[in-house]
Image (cartoon, rainbow, N blue to C red; front, side, top):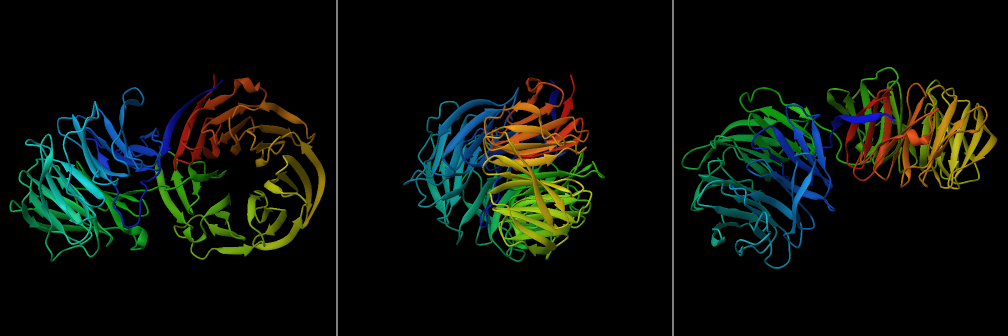
Length: 610
């Protein structure tokens, strides 16, 4: 049995929501940051973005995660009102779990002594904010004063302790404690107050809102001091704000697609130092999150792009990190370029990765989303969604605008390219097959059974169709004609995937009943049997370049690697490869395999033979 270890993670980007800010936070002692995507909390190092850990123990989508001030623990919260407190030493260790609010938690903060946590969000009645002891969950104070969702909260990082909250009722509420009790409200904003943050030295705090304003207050008393210059104001809602480590500057981001760095004077007024712009100006470039982390200035776009600026040199162009927001449904490696990986997500985003370097660009096919079937040949991608169209577009571009396409008359269920005759594409539809030459339909054939998967041989002379009934139908292909040669029966569930081996001497198939089978192409006999070790449907399958290994990925979150010529008991299993299920697998070479899944991540694993 070979050994497998994780060598790289190409992480998903933060989940975003139109019209709302998102939260990212940093480790006070390093350049690690935390952000959320679905049920995952992503721990990512800014100096080495491929250094990623993913915490996936929440049962519901996570909204916020923060390190404790001593960096020993992380508190994360979700839309069900649950807060989990966990550590990262020797794996993930759960310290506590508390039901804090009855609805979604939008923000949380630790007290500077690591003993208390305040959380705010949505709930029933007046239970919109709660502060509690991190070890027992006992409440420390009463938080009256808000009538609508509380979008943000902040804990004063020095004594005397204070808590400030703000939200959809346009109010900024100030509490003294512990135990905390309401002191007064500020009504300076005229729209949603989206974010509140104390300066690291505790002397001031700032609020920003959908009224395009930023207000600065005295940290101890909560009295208003000043505001960000109206002359240089944002032209859209301000969604997030973050202080510099020296408490003298703030960073704001807005729906107007700009980030601004302000200098905050002693009297609390903000003067614009620098406006940071990025992207091409589309809706996806609206900025919804930010963080000032040591010498990094981080902004997050609605499309999930992370821009990294250098605080000490604001003239320097930003470094961009991106990735997928949604389930990564397919992976492709190229024969000619083993360094490049293409991954495709359901929402129409195709990402180019360079092994060892990470993100290398995007091909945006959102106009054609959602994408269901995805294949590639040298220089071109071929894909289809849930309409009746098959598209061909060049790889070496960043935008696939009006890509060329053909209507195949029925929704494609699967597609396969003859890689040695790349003009030939086989498309499986519900009840039949369509043969394409380029973007020209050669023939549409009713096969008389419900088709669920297909594969065409590299030379385009043979096609295999998998059925809902679990049977494999093998056809010879001559020009535009299919002739059935044989039907293979072994599977006990609908066929989900079929792939020829690179040496074309074999093919493998997987089904919804968790079984995979390797077949000898010439004899049509089973070559590797009893591949029944998944606990749920097989979603994807791949061959190693030398045709000696087969790997399967499943809804059960695992990848299993089988070696031909060895019993299946000698298999190698990668457990919990992707939270929510594995949807793509591809060998890079005999010693490394890539996987992708529901969690929006792509991972590279190194295989060490025993």
